[in-house]
Length: 380
Ligand SMILES: *[C@@H]1O[C@H](CO)[C@@H](O)[C@H](O)[C@H]1NC(C)=O
Ligand SMILES: *[C@@H]1O[C@H](CO)[C@@H](O)[C@H](O)[C@H]1NC(C)=O
Ligand SMILES: *[C@@H]1O[C@H](CO)[C@@H](O)[C@H](O)[C@H]1NC(C)=O
Ligand SMILES: *[C@@H]1O[C@H](CO)[C@@H](O)[C@H](O)[C@H]1NC(C)=O
Image: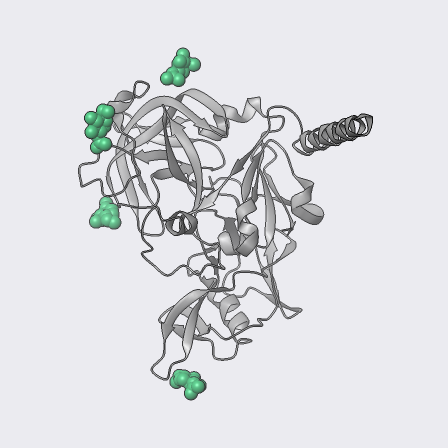
């Protein structure tokens, strides 16, 4: 009996210390970690049938967080590449084809702001427009009464995502009844003063690591990266998390970007692939046997197992791109060769888009107040 008791006491102590350590790791009160899921997991969990090929070993798919509007919890795309918070709603004039929409008539907390509207077009080609109101909105256990958001009444339908939460620098804008643009606080601006530091950190490991994907608010989790965080200054004057990017290394050989004199890129959790200047993609895929462009899309034999090493310039820091370069099955050639799509694709505008494929290799801390991001190699 005494031995058992001693064991129990020891166990309790161990548990206590484990809990204390866990709390320390979670940093100061007010910070929180938000689990994320991928649209592909939602499909695989049987929520809906798989509508496009999603390879089980790959994690890519829209980055979703659970957000509660009033008392209805919906999967919302977490997007550092846009500004607005909006949700598909029963104001929608088309058919509500998905399970995922905010039922306004079942809500006691929604309050429409008369005459206010929003409209947004994404580079992917999708769009959303609707009315604007306020609501009690919760994310990660923090509720913000009076959050301004859009309730969609038209736009591109989706069966996997109920809406977007923009995570920009600065505020978001809507239109009042006179058509004048009015700035409103984002969710992040609303919670910033209740966080120990007004930052969030994105951790999106791929493959079997994807289950641990999270967004940490108000703290940096040193167990999620190796080495030291490098601090990168942001380009001001845009809502995007933008920085200069003028060079890259393929297999250790340095190249300078020549197609533009103002090379720059943004970190965008709302884009699945990594979009780089055509010259970077060409140099990279020159090192992949059998790679070719189908139209503009870079593809290669699925049997490819090794790729050139690649690093990209993030405001003076060279960041690796090591995972998800095989983005999954694309097509089968007449002779039976299976062809896969590349996670690295071309961007022909002046601004490269470092999406999920980039984030699979890099832990990134977003700090609007300091006008910086911090970056280090991811651990998983
Ligand atoms: C919205 O909620 C109301 C009240 O609970 C219900 O009667 C209605 O069927 C719901 N509408 C939709 C489209 O889900
Ligand atoms: C919404 O927030 C207000 C203000 O904090 C609060 O009084 C109210 O109880 C909340 N409503 C719901 C349904 O949670
Ligand atoms: C919005 O997207 C829908 C479907 O994706 C498209 O039919 C519509 O033309 C788009 N609207 C605008 C204004 O671009
Ligand atoms: C299949 O066809 C492609 C495209 O013509 C060619 O590159 C490849 O070598 C062929 N593979 C085999 C096994 O014949």
